Image (cartoon, rainbow, N blue to C red; front, side, top):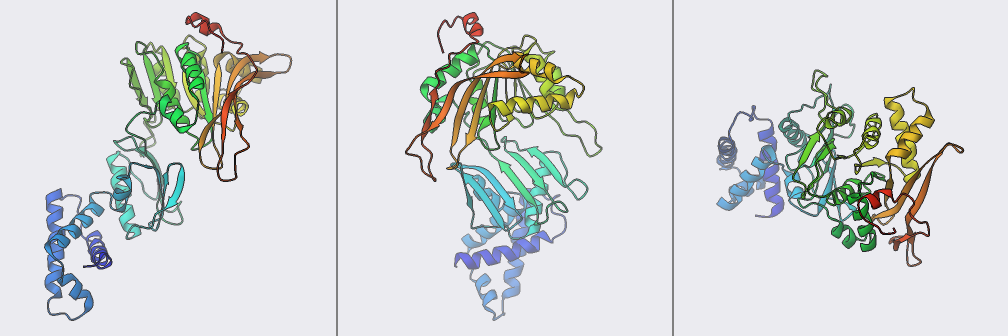
Length: 426
C-alpha cells in the first residue's frame, strides 16, 4: 500500500478516536486495544463495499495495521507529528503556528517542515497533555502558559482567544551535553586566547554579566562560563526554567521559580529566590536571566561579599546593558536616585560580555568590556573595551567573517586577579 493511502486511513482513524469518549482513564494497553478494535470494525464494515476507499482498507496487511495503530496511539498518548521532530538531535527550537505551520531551527537557521498535524483538535490534545504533565492548565480564561518538560525543554503555549491562527507552541530544546568553552571555540564564538582570559576572570571571582538579544546564545555562553567555577565552591543557581548544566561543582544548589496557581497564589519569583539564596551561605550566585526588579537584589548580593556571581540580560550592547539594569532596578525601587543606582551598578558589575546573532545567523561574541566605575562629574559609568569583534573584508551579505580582537586598552581593575594569585597582564 502507498504511503499516501496509509496516511489517509490513519487520518480517518485519528479523527474518529479524537471524537471518542474520554480516553484518559484507559491504560496504554487498553487504549491500543480500543484503537485496534476500531480499525478491525472499519475493515469488517468495508466487506462487500465496492468503493476504492474500502478496497484500500481491505488490502492492509498485518504490518500496516500495526503501524496505523501505533501512529494513532502516538497521536493520543505520544507526541504525534511532534515526536518525529523531537527525535532529531540537531533541532534546537520548534515553532508551531497553528496545526498546519511547523518551523524548526537547526544549526541556527529556520526551516519550515513539510508535515502538519491532522487537525487543530490533535494539536490541542498534545498541548493539554504537555500542560497537565507539568501540573498546569490552559484554557480560555488562562490562555498563556510557560512550563518545562522533564528533559529540560522550555515550552510557551498561547491558545485561543489570544492566538488567532490556532494554538501556538514555542519549544526550546537544550542539548543533553553541557556547553563547554571548547565547543564555543570550535563554533568560532571565541578564540583560545579569549577562553583563557575568561577562565581567569571567572576563577578570580569577577562579577560578570552576559548580554545579548533573543537567540544570541546568552544561556549557552553562561553555561560554558559556569564550568570554570572551581569545584570546591558552594554555588547556587537561580532560573525561570532550569537550563544550566554545571557538572564540576559538588556543592551545588539549583533553584527554580514557580508561577502562580489557578487561584493566583503560590508564585515564587527570582527575587524571592535571590533573597533566600543569601541565607544559604553561597560563595557564588548564578542567575539565569535578570529581567526585572530582582536586578536590585542581584546587585546588592554582588556588593555584599558574593564575588564571582554570573548572570545574563537582554540588551543591544554593553552600554545598553547598564541602561537596562538601571530600568530594572527602578522597577524594584522607584524612589532610588539615579546616581545611587549607577554607583551600585558600577561597584557590583566588573565585566560585561556582549553576544549577538549576526545576519548569517551565526552567534558571535561582539565585545568584552570592563566596568571602571561611576564618574561623578559626568554622571555616567565609565567602560573600558578590552576585546571587540572586527568584521573582515571577506564578509559578504550572506556570510560574516571576522574575529574578536584585543584593543590597545589595558585592563584597569586587576585587584581581584592579584588576590587570586594571577600576577599577569590582560
